Amino acid sequence: MAGLLGVDESGKGDFFGPLVIAGVVADEEGEKLLLGRGVRDSKLIADSRIMELADWIKGNFPNAIVTIGPEKYNELYAKIRNLNRLLAWGHCRVIENLAEKEVIVQVVSDKFGKTEYIEKALMEKGKQIPVRQQVRAEALPQVAAASILARAQFVRYLQRLSSEYKMTIPKGAGAPVDEAAVVFVAQYGKKALEKVAKVHFRNFSKLASH
Image (tube, rainbow, N blue to C red):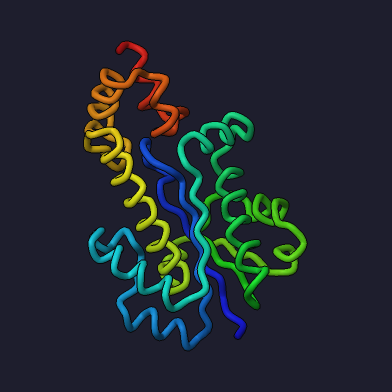
């Protein structure tokens, strides 16, 4: 059945953790199901509920998730030097993965840069699908569902890092993150940050004095 593909990301503004891009395909009937289940922008939902909803979405809708871990992210950013192009690359991987299996009438994502960034990076299958970027795209159930899948994956990744490095790895890029970075560097060294954080962030350059 033909449906609309919503794409969204998580981790773009977080120093620690990956960049995660997710996509969910749903037709009009699916939209009603998503809305009925309380699917909305992940930023408005508590993490515990996000996990439940993500499992339900995965079990009921065609979806794809691309996780760009910190090491890969740093490697790609060093080459691309542009976050919007990097985001477009991730969006395209999601679109391509789903275009191989599903009939997609349109792709909708949140506005983050020129639409041509995505259009240029698409392969053959993806090039045949119209792409629309809009402000507050999470108002669409498909994009909201994608934001939930991306957020759940991001939160799980941070939990894994916290467990692996035996310390709390916080979200965001504010003061608690700077404090955690200092603790991390004291224990594991600055070079090890490349495995857990996005090193082009100001949080990293602030550590020069440590």
